Image (cartoon, rainbow, N blue to C red; front, side, top):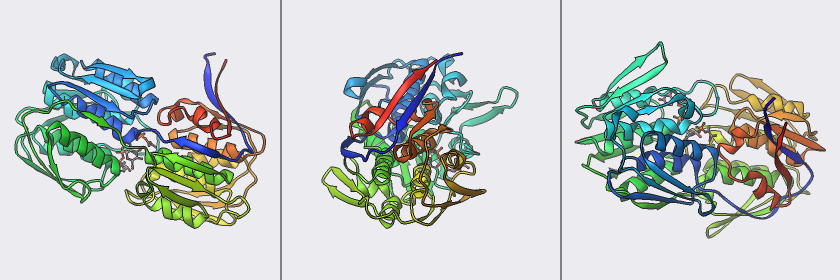
Amino acid sequence: MGQEVRYRVRGGHALNGTAFIQGAKNAVLPMIGAALLASKGRTVLRNVPVIEDVRRALELAEYVGARVEFHEAERTIVIDATTLGDSSRAVLPAEIASRFRGSVLFVPALMHRMGRARIEGVGGCNLGSRNLDFHYRGFARLGAEVTEDPERNHINVKAENLRGGRLYLDTPSHTGTENLIMAAVLTPGTTVIEHAALEPEVLDVIEFLGSMGAKISGGGTGLITVEGVEELTAVEHTVMSDRIDAGVFAMMTAATGGDVSLVGANLDHLGVARWKLEQMGVQFTQQGAVLRVRRDPSVPLRPINAVTSPFPGFATDLQSPLMALATLAEGESYIHEAIYDGRFALADELNKMGAKIEVDGTRAIVHGPTALRGTEVIAHDLRSGAAAILAGLVAEGETIVAPAYPVDRGHSQFANRLSALGADVVREEVN
Ligand SMILES: CC(=O)N[C@H]1[C@@H](OP(=O)(O)OP(=O)(O)OC[C@H]2O[C@@H](n3ccc(=O)[nH]c3=O)[C@H](O)[C@@H]2O)O[C@H](CO)[C@@H](O)[C@@H]1O
Ligand SMILES: C=C(OP(=O)(O)O)C(=O)O
C-alpha cells in the first residue's frame, strides 16, 4: 500500500482574520504556454500560485525544451524559451499532459516554435464531456493540418503556411479563446475570433501577450482581432488574483459565520456569484485591494437558485462550494449546472454527511438546513474537494477529504491559510 495524502478537518470554528488570495491558476497556465512563444529574453511571472498544476506546467515546459525556475517562496517563475526549436521535442506526453487541463495551452507555442505538435493527452477535472473541437477546428482554419491517430488516441498538428482567418466559437470557451489568440499572435495576417470568452483571466492573458509585443484588440467584447507579428519578446508580469480561490474563501467564511479580509480579491471578478451570495445573507465590502466578507451567525442563510454560465454568470468552478453552502440554508435551493454534464459528484459525498440533495441530470435540489456530520468523503475533483472541506468546517466531528491531490492542483497552501483563520484543518500523509 502506498501513502495517501488527505485533508482532515474538525468542524466548529468560525473563520476570522486575513487570508491572502493566491494568483489565478487559470491565468498563469496560459501565461506559461504564452511565455514559450518568446524567442528572446527571459519571462518573469510574479504572484504565481504554488499549486500542482503549475508544477506540471513547468515540467511540460522543460520537457519541450525550455529552461524554467520556480522560486516558490517568492511565488515567481523565470522561463527561458530561447532554447526551444528541436521539433523532436514537440510532444505533449500523456504522463504529464494528462494530469492537467492547461496542457492544451502549449500547442500554439509548439506550432510556432517547432512547426508541429503531438498531443498525447489532456487532463483536468473529470466533469463529464470536455471537448477540444473548437481548438482543433480553429487551428485548422488558420492553415494547420490537424489529424487524429485513433489507435494511439493522439492528435497531430502540422503548422506550415499559417495565415490569419475568421474564427468563431459555438460557446465562449475559456481556454479555446486563449489558445486561438495564442495561435494567431505569430500568424501572418489578421485573425478575428467571434463569440470569444469574457473571463477576467482571458483579459490578463491578453495584457501579458500585448506587453510581449502581440497586437490584440477587443478583449472583453466577445469579438477579438489579432494582427500577426513576427516575434514576441519575454517580459515581466504579475498574475491577477484568483477569483475562484476568493469565492471559495468567501463561502467558507459565510458557512462558518465569520469575518475575513481577503487580500487581493476583487468583487467585480465574482460576477453573479456576488449577488447570489448577498441574497443568501453574505456581506461584502471592497476596501481597495481587500475584500471584507462577513456573515452574521445569528441570521440563518437563505436558500438560493443558481445557473452556471460563462463570465459574468455564476462560475461553474464555484458551483460545488455553493452546493455545500446551500445545505446550511433554511429552505430549498435549486442549482442548474449548465456548463458541464457531470459536475455533481459532490452531492453523494454531502449526502454521506447528512445532506439531502436530489440530483436529476444537470439539475440539483438541496433541501436545507442540514446539521452536517463529519465522515470520510472523496475529492472527485478540485472544487468538489474544496467544497467537502467547506462542509467539514461546519460539520460535527471529523471530516476526512481524500485524495488531497485534486485540491492541491488548484489551491495553494490550503490547510495553512485556513488554519491562520482559526480553522482546524491539516493536510496529512497516512500509510
Ligand atoms: C484551465 C482553465 O482555464 N480551466 C477553466 C476553463 O476550462 P475550459 O477552457 O476547458 O472550459 P471551456 O470554457 O472550454 O468549456 C466549457 C464548455 O464548452 C465545451 N467545449 C469547450 C471547448 C471545445 O472545444 N468544445 C466544447 O464543446 C466543454 O465541453 C464545456 O462543456 O473554463 C471552465 C469554464 O469556465 C472552468 O471550469 C475551468 O476551470
Ligand atoms: C475545472 C477546473 O479546472 P481545470 O479546467 O484545470 O480542470 C477548475 O479549476 O475548477
